Every structure is written in C-alpha cells, then in structure tokens.
Image 1 (cartoon, helix red, strand yellow):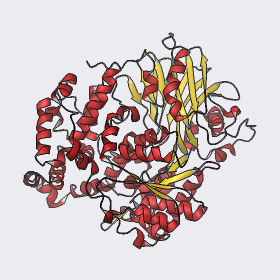
Image 2 (cartoon, rainbow, N blue to C red):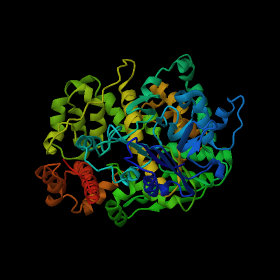
Image 3 (cartoon, rainbow, N blue to C red):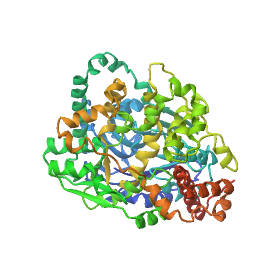
Image 4 (tube, helix red, strand yellow):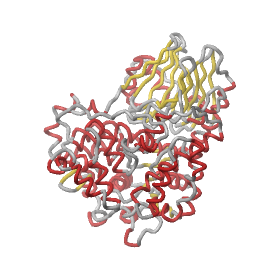
Length: 620
C-alpha cells in the first residue's frame, strides 16, 4: 500500500530531480517514508504505507537478490506466504510480500503474476535487458497510469504525479469526452488527456528498446466455463453445494485480507452483501470493529438503513455520517482535488464522506464491492433480458415512442432503453440509458465536434444469457474505471486501505460460472448472498430493507442546480453546443427530471475542464 511513480528515458528528457516532484502528490497514499532509485535513465520513487513488514529492510524501490531487477509496488499480495513456500532454497531478507513478488518474478518472469492473489500495481525494471514491466491486479483495484509519446515513458499511481513534470503537457483527448458523456466515466486505456493512458485491469506492459507490448493475462470472459471449473459445475450448481462452496471461499478471502496488527472497520449499508461481510467478520473473529453508513438528505424515518439493525444485532459500534446539501455544494467545487478524472457517479460523494470519517476509526476498511455484477443486483441486467426477445423486442420502437410522451423518469428510461441503435451497441446502450446518460444517438447533436464511440461488442458465446453478458460488461469496464477508482481515490486520500473480499479472483470465477438462477431467483437478485446471510442473521432484520427511493443527486439539483453550465463557461471550451445544454436545463426546470444525470455529467465535465485549464490545458 503506497504510491509509486517513475520513468524510463534515454535522452535525458526526465532527470533524477523529477522523482521528487512526482513523489509530492503521492504522499497521501503513503507517508511513512519516501525513497527513490535512479540509474542511467531509469527512475523509480515510492511513498510508503506498510502493513506487513514496516522495517527499513523492506523499503522500496527494492532490488532483487541478484541485483538484476529493481521494483516498486502499490498494494498487497495476500498469499505471499503461500508463494514463498514454493522456493526450495531462498533466504529472504525481509518479511515483506514485496520481496516475495520480486523474487518470484526473478524465477518465473511474467508468468509469476498468475500466482498473486491480491490488489497490486507494480513497476519492475530489468537492468540487463533494459526492459521496464508494469502489471496490474486482475480487476483493477489499484490504479496505474502511464505517459508515452513514442519516445519517453513515465508511470504513476495518480495523474497528478505525472503532471508534476513540466515536460508532460495537458492536451485534451476529445475521444475520451465522448466516452465520458456516454458512460459516465472514461474506460481504459483512455484518459481525458492525450498520450496518457490507464493500464487495463488484469494486464501487463513491457517497454523494451522503444517498443511497447501490452497483454491481458486475466480476462473475466475467458473464465466462463474455465477448464478447472467445468467438471465441477454440475456439483456446484446444486444450491446446497453452491452455498457451502461460496461460504468456504468467502471465508478464505476474508482470512487473506484480515490485517494482523492494524485496525479495521466495515462500510455497512442497506445492501445484503455489506451485512454479510460484517456478519462473517464479527461472528468468526469475535472482534469489535466500527461500522459506517451514510444518512442521506430528506431520508424518511421509515427508511432506516439496514446497517443499523445488523450492527445492533452483532453488537458492533455503528455510526451514520449525515449529509446536508451544504456539504454537496462544497464538494462539487472540490471534485478535481478529490478525484483526478471526471466521473458522473455520485457515489464519489458518498465514498469521500465515508473515507473522511473512516480516518478517525480505522486503518483499513472492508467494503462489498462487486456483488451487483457477480450476483445480478443491478436492474440493468433485467432490462438486458427483456430486450432479448418476445413482444417487447418485436414492438419496441412504437412502444418507445409511446413512453416518450410521458415525462416521468421511469417511463423515459424505458423509452430510451427500448430505442437501441444496433445489437453491437446493446451493452453500452443499456448501461448508459439505465443511468440516464447520453445515448450514442444524442452525442452528435450535443458535441460541437463529434468523435464516434466504438462499440463494446457482445461476447460471442451463445450459451451466455443477456443477464450474463451485461454483468460481464460491468466487471470488464465499470468495476475498474468507475467503482474501484472512486473507492481508491476516496480512501487513499485519507491514507486508508480498502479490502474487497468479494473481488477475490476465486470468488469471481465461481460466481460467473454459477447457473444464473442461483444469482437471480424469481424476482430476487443476489439470491445466494441472501441465502448465506439468512444462515447467520434473522431474515426479519434485512429482508424488507430498501434503498432510498429518490436519487439524492436529483433532490439536490432541484434545489441548487447552480450556474455551472452558463453560456460563458460552455462556449469557452467549445466542446458541446450551448443551445442543446440550455434546452436540457429548461426541460429539467419544467419537470423533465429524467435529465438530471445528463446535466450532472455536463457539470462534472466542465468543472474538470476549468480546473485543467487553470493548469495549462491545451484544446486543439
């Protein structure tokens, strides 16, 4: 757990002093110490936050025993002790997982990544071959950015570390603007800036003699009917067996992630998966730990969060962080400081507040990220199934036109979902329109200079249901570039580490191969999660719990839309047509509330553009 950065140059484009510049914005990710390595054009710097071996022997950058390799790592290999047992004759100098990852690479090269169970972003340099390697964990819990102009290369845990270097310019990537307005985030490998990229989750990169190779070493779609699981599927798809196996691997995942000597807590909300994580930790470990939740504006007394009931049942300390609209107004202005990329998911505010409070309570926070995609908790998946056949598919266009007459949010969402352009665009269309963002059809009308968004194609497997296709889309894109990015940015800004036990790759590979009826039974999503929770907590405490009925972003925008999208601001950047923006604002004020997320996305975009402009943004 830390911040990492560095560069590789053969023409003195970067120098050793640049490492100090890159380290400064990474201090929030690790403030225990800072060290760097520099030799003949290769530079690495590490801001340390250690939970395993805190001794000076384990500081980074770390050199291999044979002095050939040097490495920096953000994150943790939870199974490092298991990997270490595979060495026959090795005298380790530390108790650090970093040393195990490094020496395992020395023995097995890039194949060593497959053995790591954890969250990690790693940079490793081979001083003999003069090759630089980057690799990132399977689902992208830890971020990793890089700059490449076909000659010079730099990398960092955060964008701000790259932009500390005056040699790296902020040049707008207009393709990313279109992607953001469509999805609400920018999918890897793109960022908002030219020549700056995100290493994709589950990927490695090799830079050698001016040539870059990137490759996915773990692809969730390829794990469907994986050979190791195929023979066990008939057994695992029996409910009792599935429940037993799920409990076993989730228990092992928690065991791997439990810190030995650090305090921890749980983000606990209305969702059954967060209650399950808290319950397993409390009942199996018998320890007291704090639980945190958000109390939303205008929340009714009858909407008591399930978390409070679960915490009371488990006899755990519980606290709700209250949200006021004044907090939101302040937060909106600070978005670029808290999150380095534009995201239209207002969970960023929830995470930021929870992280701020978590700092007073624990060094590590457990969350339940991943359950929606793994166990079909997202309403968009049901729409994917509906649009796949029957009368709704046959008569979708006239039905969409009929629904469009109604200005109610649910009716307009349904109308937009039905009006998909082509089957190749189905996955991103459902994702986008379920979140009330701009469709691909709307983008040419909105953007002053339209850059087409490439389709996110369906996975060519006739055995997969639309439920499964849509869930795989979320795991492949939304998870790393939206949800986990927000989680990392919020917690690391407070120097707190996240633990996401449902995203252990064994849990993921088990869940995606399950019969969908064990994940969505009747009209009940997250079926297996709820069955496991019911074994340990009385169902009456959580079965009828529901989330807040109205989106509180919408509530805030109705009261305080503000002047973030006035004519001067919009025309100054010239990326979107003000007449279209003005029409959206007028319709929203007249009661077309379904437009709130489109307006929020435009607001976020222009706040980030204004901040980047103050730091030298170039728009071509």
